[in-house]
Image (cartoon, rainbow, N blue to C red; front, side, top):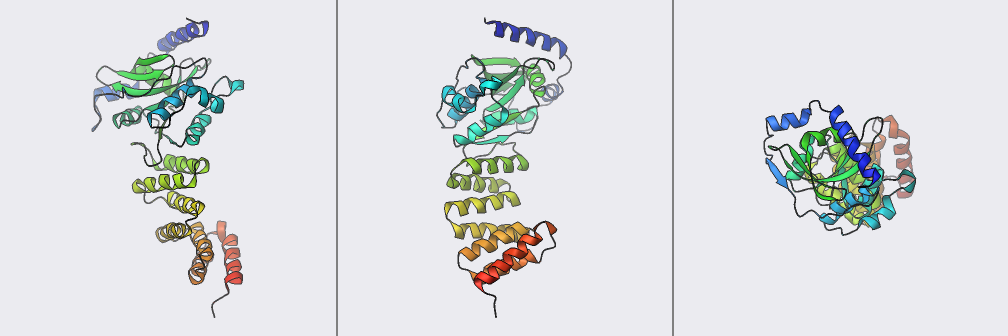
Length: 318
């Protein structure tokens, strides 16, 4: 055992002693299993990559990416996301690294039940743990691959251990001490079972910035199947379609956004601009007027400028 490993083990013992109080979420789950949740799950086919020193982030990310058909390695990912000055990988780098490999990384709600429900849905979860103490943190990324509620255990791909069995209450303590941070990486046509709309919007927008536009279209369309009332997702779909060169599809997306949210100046403005580029003069001017007539002071100047520009360029109706 290396000195670092020995120190980590000692810190774990200290943490267990100091954190020996109630693990509220674990106790609640073991007392009453939530509806629709299997008592035990193990995603045994999840790949495993043993980490090298300080490279738990690349190893964890390689695990989940390989599991969804994005073959990679900790060494390759380490070149992209490992920060030598930090001797580790920041959370933002983990998310960005997933996006660069064509996966949508979505933050989960910070509850133990959310982690278990993702596992129940067949999706491994990247988790950040603090294996140390508040005054001496030891950050560690691992991948949750299963659980056994009756036994009070969580199963992890962690460090150099392919199947680490951790008491669920210990997991809860170390995870909460790291801010209850977790994410799921999936292809753009799938979303986490427990994902919430704000996290989905953030994930989709971030993916759009890193991925080819056609892949962003897939992500937005799949998200809209579950969160069809989201203005941000509908606008994102329009922008992604526009980026692919599908201006007619983009106009349809913006029109749907404007119809559902008639007080959204950006929806009307994007619709006006796109209709103008398609040569649809009357529709473009009508949309621009809708934007200019809104009382939203935030967009008033831009909406009026757009209308003036279109009237000069397209000509005002007689």
